[in-house]
Image (cartoon, helix red, strand yellow):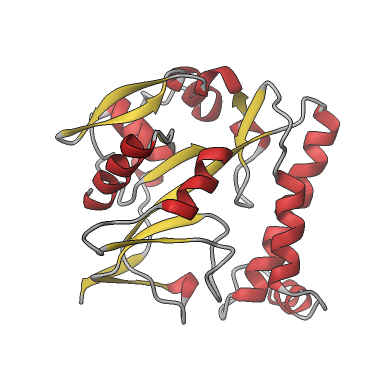
Length: 246
């Protein structure tokens, strides 16, 4: 919450747009705070604001730092995080790369209106992200050990993959549709009308108030269906990590 408070402060001062997203946004709407079994914070930023944020964000107290995928060596993720440098987080999938407790900052990009081309882009980005994970992870992130070693041995670098991914997902020409494109997982179902994020409102989260896209109900309904309905107990999963003050 401290990290989110500072990101909110900076965005307000600099006129940068952001919105609570994913489970954090559902939590704000349904619980006015965290989903009871959730344990992280996600925000969206339009691509233009995201790039400005990466270049300019600073915490006057020096506690928090933004991690830019283009600049961090051996960085596992393909999107930015803001970390608390006074902490340490241990995650199995990022073994050997230690960072502090963080919030996720995802850019939101325009996507083509050509549905066949959109499907091709989503298939290609999934493959490129999969290869990248195999290249950078010391443990096998796939179900197949053979596939892991095949991808890992391909004669391409992480820098090359980052370049190909950026060329694939970043569109400068506006369209009527947006999506978070910086992970393998989000599917075409996660696309939503650009008008949902044209304006912003505020919602309570825990004992604070944060920015959310004005079209949050449309976005969440398209992505999750009846998001106000609690999922079955066996689907109420948390992330696997340990976190420490240092």
